[in-house]
Amino acid sequence: MTKLAVVEFKLLVREPGAVFSLLIPLFILVVFGSSIQPGDTVLLPIALAIAVGLVGLYMLPTTLATYRERGILRRMSTTPARPVNLLVVQVLLQLVLALAACGLLLAVAGAVLGAHLPTRVLPGVLTFLLGTAAMFAIGLLIAALAPNGRSANGIGVLLYFPLAYLAGLMQPPSQMPAIVAAVGEYTPMGAFRLSMQDVWAGGVPDPLPLGVMAAYALVVSVAAARFFRWE
Amino acid sequence: MTVIDVTDLRKGYAGRTVLDGVSFSVEAGEIFGILGPNGAGKTTTVECVEGLRRPDGGSVRVLGLDPFTDGRALREQVGVQLQHTQLPENIKVWEALDLYASFYARPRDWRGLLEEWGLADKRDARFGKLSGGQRQRLFIALALVGDPRVAFLDELTTGLDPQARRVTWELVKRIRDNGVTVVLVSHFMDEVEELCDRVAVLDQGRVVALDTPAGLVGGEQRMRFTLMAGDSVPGLDGLPGVTGVTRTGDRVVVTGRGDFAPAVTAHLARHRVTVSDLRIDRRTLDDAFAALTGRSFTN
Image 1 (cartoon, each protein chain N blue to C red):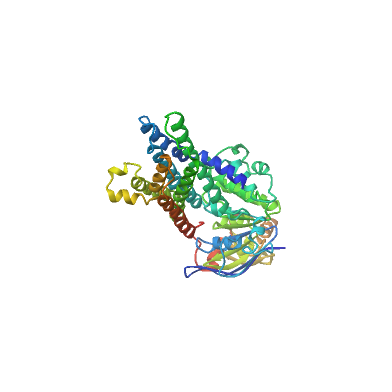
Image 2 (image 1 turned 90 degrees about the horizontal axis):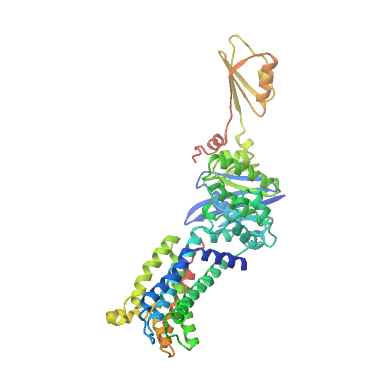
């Protein structure tokens, strides 16, 4: 299991997609952050949502569906090792990637851009975990349903942009049609952004978006487990 | 010792019968071929034996174990090379071997396998950069890294050029010479003839024949030659193995079984008879398959 984790970690580092999921949110942060206000509570939550969304909707499903398509899970099931270990290692590594992307954003925002960082850690960690769980669950469902790596990639990208729009990551929700903005609060990335903004404002996150994320995490991952195929 | 025992194996998908009562057994130390055209049920058969698929009926024992209930204990002792399997593009050769070795309780030293399979200079190459033959050798090495007692090789040489196929055949013989029982799935007649000690011929989910390649080819062979004008050869029909002699003008056709051809040529030499156009029509497994099924074997 340790060796599996080490090898999978090396493969992740060699994957150009992993670098992109670190750099794209950072790029957005730096471009928009040059004019950041000291008390800003909007930009960093958006950048964090983009980062976690990229990993959950794009990296995770593409990797897993490719592994199934190439018969790697099947090949593993002919050895004494269990292929479910590979899934567990992948989910953990992608979680590390999401953490790294968020850590990088916070470090650059805090050290270089002089952005405001929340002082209370626990609500931020809770929001991160719930949001990541919700978006990873969607990624797992994509991996379960997509026939191969390329289509998983396509579905991920196809889902990513409407979800990012609904979540208010592309346009401030105040400028969106009211009904669209309201729907957006019930999407995983929208709920993540809302909770993170509460965290940045220094308060305790509203239970509603937290509940929305928990519900996605639970329901969608059950569906993913139900539909997952090993080959 | 019987290593694999399959009795009346049955399997269907969505109402379509794929295996219709397949039975065979594999003895220790042999290369056992499973031969048949595409769609005959070869891969499904080995997948049931490997425990990847649950049969609808019949029984399977591998090394005395049930592939389903004793799967884990069994997988320690078998090595598998699957058709249509790949590795991640970016994994290096040594990493793949090191990783697969870690799956087994008592693996072989993968460094030795690198040498043995001619991959030492590709140690740090990524899977995506390997040629077809190198990939195939890596897959075989991965199938052997657990130090198995039985190795399953499925469509080993599909997609390889003729030279790489020859090289791979030599390697498969070496696996057997190292004491590993080999189950070889193939739709290539020449491959099975070259490698296998015994062959089960599958057609439409049934075993239509189970014999040595020579036994399958079996039957009579014909030897033809042309005599110099006016020459005659008495006593050909009394030679061991010869079943018939017909002469039309100067053309002679001798039919026979087994090793009759050397006896005939020695006889000709003894009588100082010079012949021309000497040909032996050897029946091939293709002929045998056509005789068994009434259909030609098309790759």
